[in-house]
Length: 128
Image (cartoon, rainbow, N blue to C red; front, side, top):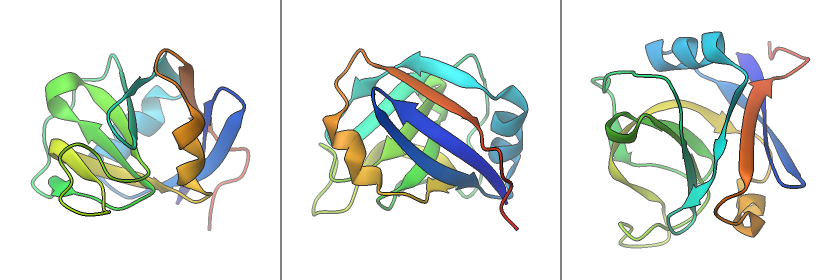
């Protein structure tokens, strides 16, 4: 697994990328930076990446999932219910390509306000 660090304001959470086409494209583009937008307990930001929706894309996600949202060319960090949720689990506005997960406490991102700078970079350590 490839390790990453997700940072916004004074919050930093480690994560790892999975073994998908989207994850590889994101890894190649790191570091990425954008302006946070919030949608319930989700932060997302636009990127210059254009990646098609993968066959495994889904709207039902889990706390800590990292997704790429093809309609907005955006990276999404899920840490709780969104306006599309029907319960306590996050739900994307439409299917996202899951490319990894936060390994730290993703709910810490609740403190991040819209307009903050979000950065994703490579970790110094790669996971086994």
